[in-house]
Image 1: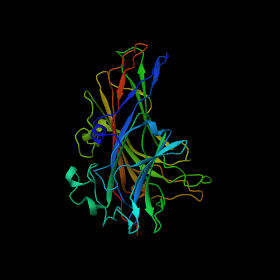
Image 2: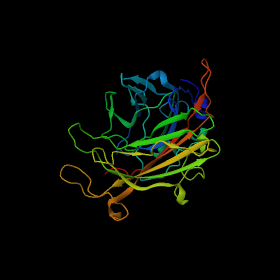
Image 3: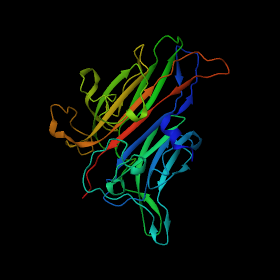
Image 4: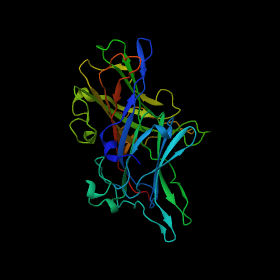
Length: 341
């Protein structure tokens, strides 16, 4: 597996141009995050399914010697790549597993790995893991799953997926290199559990955004860092509350729109916070409340967050044999969940 130290630094991808006023840009993405074991059972692995991504697009992965599962394997499904972290299994059973947390706990986004490498001193009993990938591409959808193991050494998904949507980025470079780039970020709703369902599970989302004249560093993309918007400044609040539900008209995704950055901006950072929807549904499963401010009882506990940053290199018209590079840092899933009964 390729160097994790390289992975923690950056990922570069080629930028392609076409002739219209704006040209679609292909870019790389990088994410690393802590995730809490909320399954109610000892887990034996974890999967990250990246739709629209080939194994060759995966530049680096976070693994050995930092976490108990070591390096992952890559599984090509034909339409997606699954990054699978898994315990070894032998005559004495499973070698390692992620324990059940004793209760809810906050995570700063960079804690659940061995303390010898800067992780939490209680990592082995904490009940969470740290995973990460760097891509030369942009997945159309990202799904996270815990894996359970049986007595015969087989792994299977642990019930429902980890319910934290991941953003999909789109960047368009102007023909005039002096003009600002246009950036779009889209967060999809949680998908329907069954094909015959009319609606998916509803959740609430809050969105904060900030731009900066300097590139964002990966290790700063954690909750509480001054570079991550949290709504403390009114200008940072992009969306105060929005319902997010697959199948419901007008709330199937959160789309920032394709907006120009400020002329002096080198980066844009977004923080997405997710909360449970505890309001009523109709008989078909459609959420009936869309105003969280007027109905605070419909807002449940905090589910987790995505911190995502886009760093822009200067855009220039390339020579026929030379393409500029775009550096994208996408980081931070910080989730905290209660142990299931």
